[in-house]
Image (cartoon, rainbow, N blue to C red):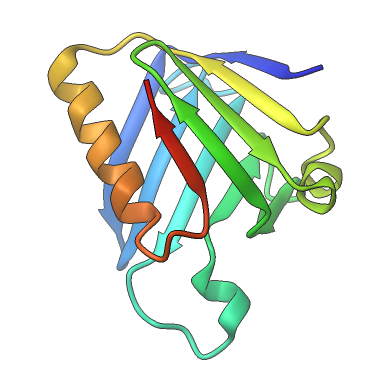
Length: 126
Protein backbone atom coordinates (compact mmCIF):
# COMPACT_ATOMS: atom_id res chain seq x y z
CA UNK A 1 0.00 0.00 0.00
CA UNK A 2 1.26 3.46 -0.90
CA UNK A 3 1.61 6.45 1.36
CA UNK A 4 -0.45 9.36 -0.02
CA UNK A 5 0.63 12.98 0.36
CA UNK A 6 -1.59 15.82 -0.84
CA UNK A 7 0.77 18.63 -1.78
CA UNK A 8 -0.45 22.20 -2.07
CA UNK A 9 3.12 23.44 -2.61
CA UNK A 10 5.60 22.27 -5.28
CA UNK A 11 9.15 23.66 -5.44
CA UNK A 12 11.94 23.30 -8.00
CA UNK A 13 15.19 25.18 -7.64
CA UNK A 14 18.93 25.22 -7.07
CA UNK A 15 20.53 26.11 -3.75
CA UNK A 16 24.23 25.76 -2.89
CA UNK A 17 24.93 23.82 -6.11
CA UNK A 18 22.21 21.32 -5.24
CA UNK A 19 19.12 20.67 -7.36
CA UNK A 20 15.98 20.54 -5.20
CA UNK A 21 12.50 19.27 -6.02
CA UNK A 22 10.00 19.36 -3.19
CA UNK A 23 6.36 18.60 -2.55
CA UNK A 24 4.72 19.77 0.69
CA UNK A 25 1.30 19.88 2.27
CA UNK A 26 1.83 23.61 3.01
CA UNK A 27 4.46 26.14 1.96
CA UNK A 28 4.93 27.74 5.39
CA UNK A 29 3.46 25.38 8.00
CA UNK A 30 4.81 22.16 6.53
CA UNK A 31 3.91 18.93 8.28
CA UNK A 32 4.37 16.45 5.43
CA UNK A 33 6.80 16.66 2.55
CA UNK A 34 8.96 14.77 0.09
CA UNK A 35 12.22 16.38 -0.97
CA UNK A 36 14.56 15.21 -3.73
CA UNK A 37 18.13 16.54 -3.77
CA UNK A 38 21.03 16.00 -6.15
CA UNK A 39 24.44 17.66 -6.03
CA UNK A 40 25.38 19.41 -9.26
CA UNK A 41 29.06 18.81 -8.42
CA UNK A 42 30.88 15.49 -8.56
CA UNK A 43 31.35 14.37 -4.96
CA UNK A 44 34.37 12.36 -3.76
CA UNK A 45 32.17 9.83 -1.96
CA UNK A 46 30.18 7.93 -4.67
CA UNK A 47 26.94 7.53 -2.68
CA UNK A 48 26.70 11.34 -2.41
CA UNK A 49 26.32 11.49 -6.21
CA UNK A 50 23.01 9.63 -6.00
CA UNK A 51 19.62 11.28 -5.63
CA UNK A 52 18.78 11.92 -1.96
CA UNK A 53 15.15 11.57 -0.87
CA UNK A 54 13.65 12.81 2.40
CA UNK A 55 10.17 12.03 3.73
CA UNK A 56 8.96 14.38 6.49
CA UNK A 57 12.27 14.44 8.42
CA UNK A 58 16.03 14.12 7.90
CA UNK A 59 15.81 10.99 10.08
CA UNK A 60 13.69 9.51 7.28
CA UNK A 61 16.02 9.96 4.32
CA UNK A 62 18.35 8.00 2.06
CA UNK A 63 20.77 8.32 -0.86
CA UNK A 64 19.75 6.20 -3.83
CA UNK A 65 17.15 3.46 -3.83
CA UNK A 66 14.60 5.31 -5.96
CA UNK A 67 13.76 2.65 -8.52
CA UNK A 68 11.06 4.30 -10.58
CA UNK A 69 9.03 7.49 -10.82
CA UNK A 70 5.77 7.85 -12.72
CA UNK A 71 5.00 11.52 -13.27
CA UNK A 72 1.68 12.85 -14.52
CA UNK A 73 0.07 16.27 -14.41
CA UNK A 74 -1.58 15.75 -11.01
CA UNK A 75 0.15 12.72 -9.49
CA UNK A 76 3.67 11.44 -8.93
CA UNK A 77 4.29 7.85 -7.85
CA UNK A 78 7.69 7.03 -6.36
CA UNK A 79 8.77 3.39 -6.13
CA UNK A 80 11.56 2.59 -3.68
CA UNK A 81 13.95 -0.26 -2.96
CA UNK A 82 13.22 -2.21 0.22
CA UNK A 83 16.23 -0.59 1.94
CA UNK A 84 15.18 2.96 1.06
CA UNK A 85 11.56 2.26 2.00
CA UNK A 86 12.81 1.00 5.37
CA UNK A 87 14.92 4.16 5.90
CA UNK A 88 11.94 6.38 5.05
CA UNK A 89 9.65 4.15 7.16
CA UNK A 90 7.14 3.68 4.35
CA UNK A 91 5.96 0.79 2.22
CA UNK A 92 7.64 0.53 -1.15
CA UNK A 93 5.92 3.52 -2.76
CA UNK A 94 4.77 7.07 -2.14
CA UNK A 95 2.02 8.80 -4.13
CA UNK A 96 1.81 12.58 -4.18
CA UNK A 97 -1.23 14.44 -5.49
CA UNK A 98 -0.60 18.04 -6.58
CA UNK A 99 -2.07 20.65 -8.90
CA UNK A 100 0.12 22.91 -11.04
CA UNK A 101 -0.36 24.62 -14.39
CA UNK A 102 1.10 23.33 -17.67
CA UNK A 103 4.13 25.65 -17.58
CA UNK A 104 5.13 24.55 -14.06
CA UNK A 105 4.48 20.91 -14.98
CA UNK A 106 6.88 21.22 -17.93
CA UNK A 107 9.44 22.79 -15.57
CA UNK A 108 8.92 19.89 -13.16
CA UNK A 109 9.56 17.37 -15.96
CA UNK A 110 12.70 19.25 -16.96
CA UNK A 111 13.99 19.31 -13.39
CA UNK A 112 13.33 15.58 -12.91
CA UNK A 113 15.26 14.88 -16.12
CA UNK A 114 18.11 17.01 -14.78
CA UNK A 115 17.92 15.25 -11.40
CA UNK A 116 18.21 11.95 -13.25
CA UNK A 117 21.16 12.94 -15.45
CA UNK A 118 22.97 9.71 -14.46
CA UNK A 119 19.85 7.70 -15.34
CA UNK A 120 19.78 5.93 -12.00
CA UNK A 121 15.95 6.16 -11.89
CA UNK A 122 13.44 4.86 -14.43
CA UNK A 123 11.22 7.89 -15.07
CA UNK A 124 7.94 7.55 -16.93
CA UNK A 125 6.07 10.68 -18.03
CA UNK A 126 2.33 10.26 -18.63
